[in-house]
Length: 298
Image (cartoon, rainbow, N blue to C red; front, side, top):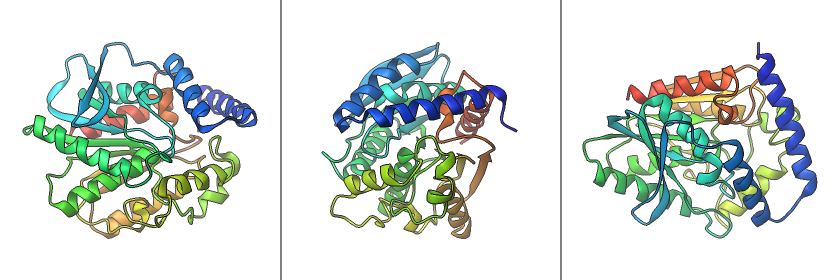
């Protein structure tokens, strides 16, 4: 059963997002508002040094926890439906994961749609990964990402596999968005309990902006339709109160059928990327701790 404190946050998030939706605003205003509020609400955790940097031509931030291991490094790909999100919005979540894993983390500020539609985000993730490997040839690179960033991490792993590059050591995926066609039943059946996606309009709009004139079912845009053999071991965490629950279950089933090692854990009463509240209630801390331990063991 979900804790009382997590239930308080669930209803608070649901209420706040409803108010935010009623205010409306342009995409630029939405991005700016999210950046501003996130810097206040989700700063880097204590003990994590933040350093702006580039990997190749791709901007981002190094998040370096105290006494980080030199064996591995995390490449983190943020969520935001491919149209919002930045280092400002995800510095806290990525920093908590880096701390839990005891690893340095590069939080990539990849290009967003509609200004830069698919495959720009995949290209940036690929370029950053190759630059990170060139700079750290002896370190294992592990991938992590939430929501669209989870789908992007999977797309990156697919591209690396198909190009014959050194694969990541592991993937930690938080509520990954893998089906831009929105064909899975929970896109509808879980909408009423999902604070972020109470209907399919937001995801549908974002998918169209990201894919532009390209096929929504392209395997690097919607890995739900990809061949999933030969992928690194993967841990998926998803909430039972979210529209993307079906994406996570289908991904785990398809990876298992293709022979790729995968574990899935669905958290009772949790919503989309609740881990962003790490440090505030037990279920967020438990998920981040498990994901961090998984990446550390790669």
